[in-house]
Amino acid sequence: GFFTVERTCPTCGGMGQIVKNPCKSCGGAGRVERERSLSVNIPAGVETGTRIRLAGEGEAGLRGGPAGDLYIFIEVGGHPLFERDGLNLFCRVPVSMTAAALGGEIEVPTIDGGRSRVKVPGGSQSGKQMRLRSKGMPALRGNAQGDMFIELAVETPVNLTTRQKELLREFEELSEENNPEGSSFFTKVKSFWED
Image (tube, rainbow, N blue to C red; front, side, top):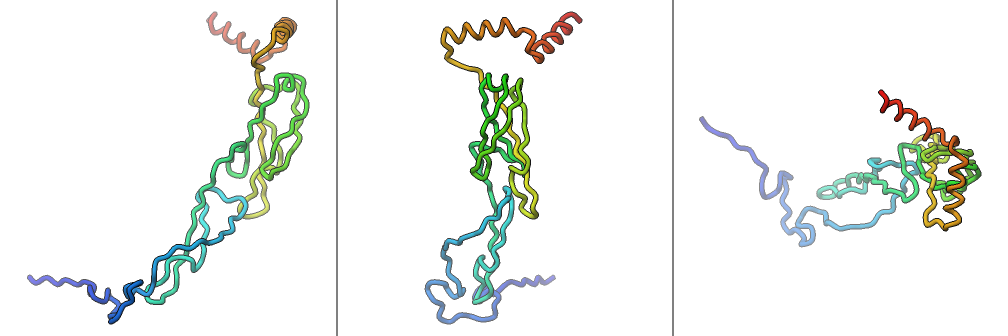
């Protein structure tokens, strides 16, 4: 049988017209590639993967056609103090051993550059979380605001002097029954070994 092949005209590119004297910069396409900088407003609360559309800022259309749209995909960088999970923020704050044992107040940073005072209850352990309502990230749409969670990291003192070591040993002798988690753990271990 016979084969029929259809293809676009290599001269006009399917436009039906031929540019007799094409300019040297565009080659008859009617557009030239160039770069330019745009100022873009990033709304509060954006997350990684958020798409922003800039109408008419894309590639120019062929032979005077309308320009396309430009889509920007957001990639949110990390922060040295805060970790984000949706609208909520997490901040790990070191506290001294004495402040954790006796309780007190600490000052913590907030994402807006401010400060908040947080009461640390006496006997706090490492990993204890406290919630600061409406101190997290704003929602992209709506008026919702996330929370900020403070996680305590109780610090063990280092480079102790001889006097500090003596005081800590004396303290340990006086506080054998003040360690509920440790005594509970060793009771479980003892029963595990006996079984």
